[in-house]
Length: 97
Image (cartoon, rainbow, N blue to C red):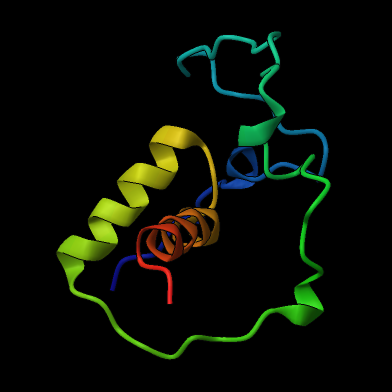
């Protein structure tokens, strides 16, 4: 039987807050601009619903519908719930009781 040589893996882990990117890691650009359109920033929205008021809808949708919904939300930088909320508002306006 051959004797196993222990591997030195100390350079693979960093202590919390002391990690640095490797020398060959790609650089990222620093984002300095902020969006001025507050309607698309869901974190600053004044009409934010408390999470305790949310409930599950409990239904499934086709993959294509989910894909379309997510594309719309990503393009407008809003949540999926906000897209559905606007869609229901438009539906109610177009189809009054």
